[in-house]
Length: 171
Image (cartoon, rainbow, N blue to C red; front, side, top):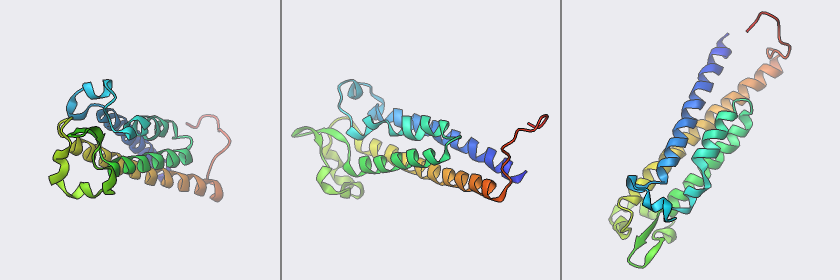
């Protein structure tokens, strides 16, 4: 009985995390709430991997049946989001559109004085840092929840409490 309640809670939590990942990834397409950068392809290249929409979002919703895939997809989102965070945003600088902080190995994350190198879109550094960080946290939680689900399912199978036969009248 307790494992059913726990399984239901984990499923509900995964659905919530997946929906938030989709929303956050969609927001990455609109730096500072503006649509012009997405339509002119002036976004960080890691945004185009759809990690929050497809892999941490939709695929995690479908992975209720396949928790092991949920671990892999959420792990993918975690890694790609971390790479996007470390690389920094694609922005307009005095030299044109480029990855202004690509060679800094993520040091720009702790030195906000150099964020002004990105002239456009406005606040794109903060935008990327916040949203990629949220995706990292959500994905890490999803990996943990999926691991718990895999362990729970394995323990049910190995301990003999996993019912393979559908019994009439029991829902």
